[in-house]
Image (cartoon, rainbow, N blue to C red; front, side, top):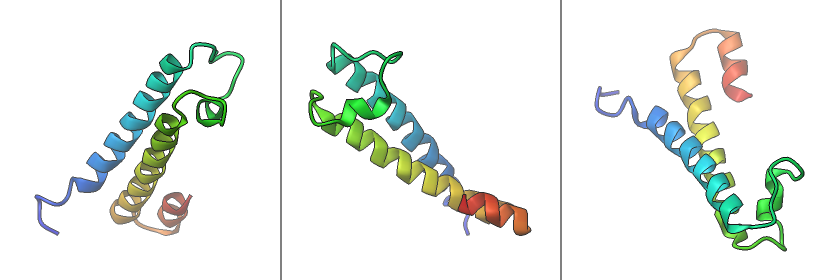
Length: 88
């Protein structure tokens, strides 16, 4: 693989994780009754939540980030422990 394409997966993972946390903050701000102490983050994507698509998009970006990180781990590390780590 060329040097130029090497950083795509790590950047995708970092961007996805950042987008997830941005969605958590924005969805929490949009839902005035939400308490991070009393409720889980899934309440931000629930039916009665205001603008649940924000958190749903955040969860989707988290899944893309996790997959990108796993693929990059599988490429960089060697051995059976690395394979198990990448799959998990």
